[in-house]
Length: 105
Image (tube, rainbow, N blue to C red):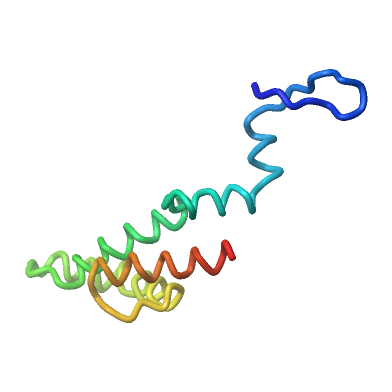
């Protein structure tokens, strides 16, 4: 539990960690950006992009079939959401960080 001084009566008010994070979402995102930490939803999308990109180019035909069935739509959706302009991990990382930067600022 974290303590926060009260303004009116000098008593200490106890706040749980969830309350602290819920009240300061904008500050939390800004802090994550400054420390170079992506929120979990951005991390998961980045991992999906990297994984599906590898599956798309795989030499084994079974992987290509699964990509055609399950991955094609998801990969295209993520590429359009993050405006990915290249097909490498570096482009994926830069695109995800660009979108996160627009969310923060």
